[in-house]
Length: 217
Image (cartoon, rainbow, N blue to C red; front, side, top):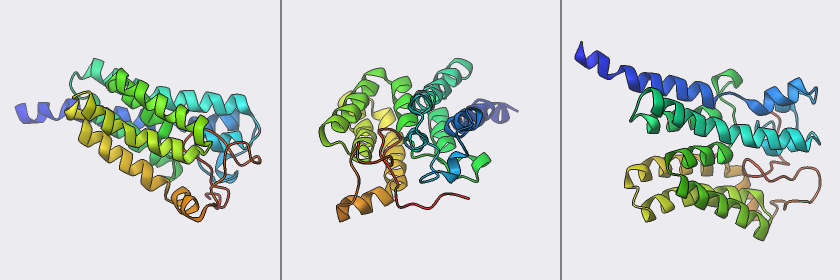
């Protein structure tokens, strides 16, 4: 009986975190605003960058903020309900965003949601994340570079702040962000990754653009 009880809190954290993270705000907002099915626009990605391709900057900004907020909310809510299981919720929320069951596991790239998670786990690390993301965005004007660098900064800042309890989790999540950006990495190597402001297929959120990608069905 005691062993069964021990599994209750982690299970709640896992399910609640995944459900919160899997809310596809980009898809919902564009649908409610009659801006089309986001999965058939541009890259088919559900993040704010692809929402920007609809020409609705307000929807893109709302998607960015809500994707960030759901990552933070998952950690905070689970820590309140099940103290000590925030990291479980963090991992589940991130996976929910990147691989939502409702969209056949075709989700976003996780940059905004990871920022919310990092802020909730240890806010000084979240500030570092934001500075790296926004700073590189302004400096190099390549969204994917800024997003990937911000993700990699999370485990690095975790080590620098002495939060070694978070480093392995953040390393794993950063690796998933890099994997989700594999098409961007190929274009960076080829020198064809677009910069912000060049054409309607550019944007500043969710880690970059996918001008050559096929829409998800």
